[in-house]
Picture: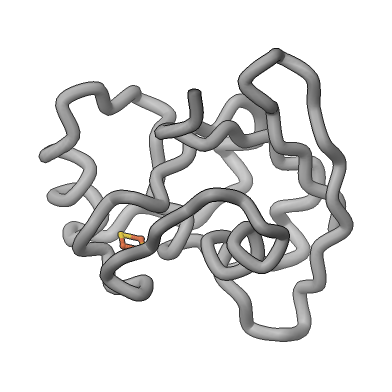
Length: 104
Ligand code: FES
């Protein structure tokens, strides 16, 4: 699937992500050397993997209560913020546009 990451300067980087490896969006972005701490290792407990979904929010799975509760602790959370570790890459996510929430 094709994913787009919006950079801090407003440009977008296009990535071709595999959907058959069981990776979460967090794991994939980390593998692409994006600066994501993922301190909790994908347990929805640290929120360092937070992304803002710019396009394609409707393509994503619903938020779990854990994800919702964690996002709710971020002071600057946006309505389109998600935890990338809770989003397993799948064919429906083709064309998704995200921005790292903590990127400057
Ligand atoms: Fe910690 Fe996603 S990696 S909340």
